[in-house]
Image (cartoon, rainbow, N blue to C red; front, top):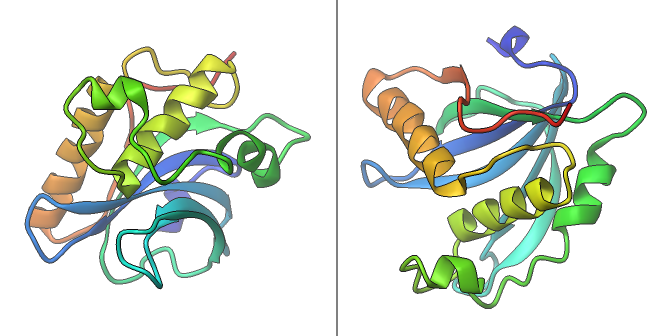
Length: 164
C-alpha cells in the first residue's frame, strides 16, 4: 500500500534475494502514490564492478520488494537531486575504512547504503543516524520478517530519523 509512504520521505528499500536473509539495499525517495526515485549501487552490466545509479520507480509493489523502512526526510524546497549531491560520488571500488575495520571484505550495495547513511549523518542532512550498524540490524529484521511473512513491510526506523 503506497499510501504509507510520505512525500519526500527517505526509505531503506529492500529487495529479496533468492537466498533467505539476503537483500539488495537501496535508498528510496517517495514522491507520492505514483512513485519516486531509487538511489543505489549496482554491479550490472559487469558483475563485481559497482557504480551509483539514480532511477525512477513507479511500481512500488514490484516483485521482490520486501520492506520500506523510513529513515529520514527531505526538507521543503529540496528534492532527490539534493540527496544525490551527497551520495553520488561514493567510491564503489573499495570498502570504506570504517566498514573495513568492522569486517567488510568486499564492496556491495549494503556497503554503499551504509556509507551513504554515514555521509548524510555527518553532513547533518536528511538522515540522522548515530549508529549505522544498529540501523542495519533493524532494517534486516524488517526485511526478514517480510521475506517469511509474504507481504511488504512498511516501518519507521528507531535508529534513524530526519534532522530537525
